[in-house]
Length: 215
Image (cartoon, rainbow, N blue to C red):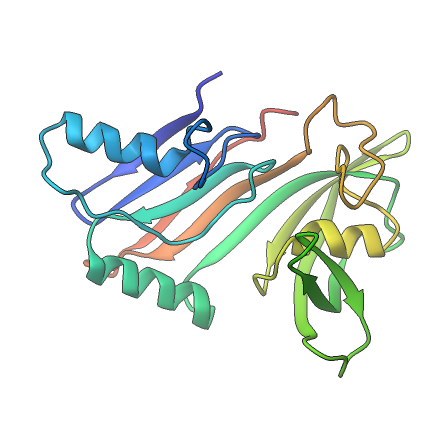
């Protein structure tokens, strides 16, 4: 399978898809990452000292869509859309181990990140370094002891989807950090499947979708 694909490109930005297990950025020279591969592609095209600004990061085990800017002004505008939750919508699909009692709803928790272990956990509101996190979800399909859910991230916290659903009693299938790594066929069954945003130059509404490879 390809490590990544360019789904859309213009003078201001890239819309990219990456496979599960491929890092967006990596400090390890031995581990090729998408941003380095993309930079090499631009150099091969003859672009001198290309600018690449990462807009939204995906964790290495997660497959799906993300954005990179080709100019500083575009990067600033898109990052503002992410930070201020205006125009930018990020949707995911995931297979969960178990079933959720409510077929449609909102999960609100407070998360604290542990940098030493690179994990996050749910804590009480008001706890030191706690950050509010929120997502909405809808169950699309159920079978045996599995659920396919569509998720909209309303905040962007570290490992948020994985932590919140594990806390709710239905971890993402194949999650080795927060679940039991079961049912994932060696892969975390989580995909960044849809992006909506406003084009930083034209103001046009942009919409991109990618079907999860694990379905």
